[in-house]
Image: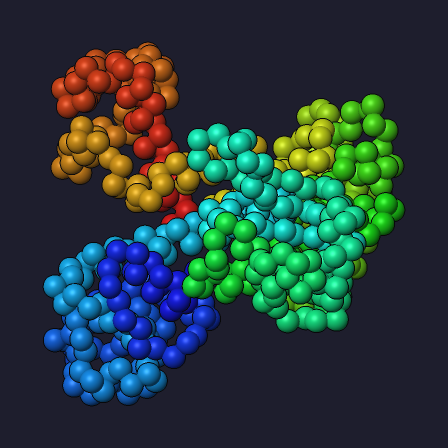
Length: 517
């Protein structure tokens, strides 16, 4: 998230004396800070921290950064045309300034990330407001176009504070009638005025309080209103720009909820798309749209269909959805993120998925499709989870076996787990010291100790089965195992160590197989 000069200056002024020599600009335009380096170009829209004696006497040409100068800069720098903030104490540690600003960015980045998560999950306006209280610490009121309070935080009545002041959250009720009558002009004017307004309520209610109001529009249609009220403290520098940022998330949430509430007879495809997009869907409404009996268990399988990369002339998505639904009557198909997603009712037995695949096999071959298939499930409201299973099967399967047509999730759970359990490390970075020694011995010996250990573990340390699988005499195997035990020590008898070695060997094999493919 980017911040404004006002926000940066306010944060610095809380712990040090500063002087602003910048034109007034409350736009959120500055990125995280860096230290000034002489003779290096200054990256645009960065915050540059510079001791005064490092700056050249003449300002840099076409300067598009905010300069935080420790001590008085050369006179030409503070002519009011450039974004310069002066920290008066020239002995201030630059790292202190850097850390203050970094902490500030961390705070606002975390806020924006949380708003994004809420928006993606259920677009809950109340949750968004609760998360934003610490940012504004003032009253926020979000209402829809019918003057219904979607979320508001209010101070508790005097005497009801517990310890420090706490905000109370309310939602779901209309604005009280007496207040609505007084504030009608303020809120209803949002239908005509699309620009934010800074107002004093004294003109309509007699109460001397400032309000910053942002009307919310989507496609030129008025959706509601958000207001920040200075009930606890006056507006701090930069807060109005932050409220406009916050209003974008509220506007998106209102639009999502408006789509969900358009019509009770919304199509099954639209409801499935809502599930895929993390939007909440009423289960009874979904069952009615899909014509399912609510007290009957229905089994489903999810499928994700993509075109082979060599295919350039892909038919329209709606046509493909209709084609799949015609071939599979008990199915629903949607276009999601430029891909075809299918949910098909199946029998809950070993032949259910195979029967479906045999029906659509001509489509897979004739149109050069590849398809990922989820596990069987019964709760259609969990469609997104099984869409993700199908996607994982498709992604992992195509890496290992790119020419296949069908990839079942159950066949690629292990490679998927192996490819994700190593985190940020490369496979070779996860090898233990003991395994490293064994690998080194393997490279210098004519005996394949590595494969011997792999087969030995696969046979649960059974020497008879291991000797048979390796076509070795038992005494020869015992000689090999003696050498392996000498390197690995007693750890080889530990079940956790055995699991680790197996996982590492599997990861090595899958990584090698993926590279080869």
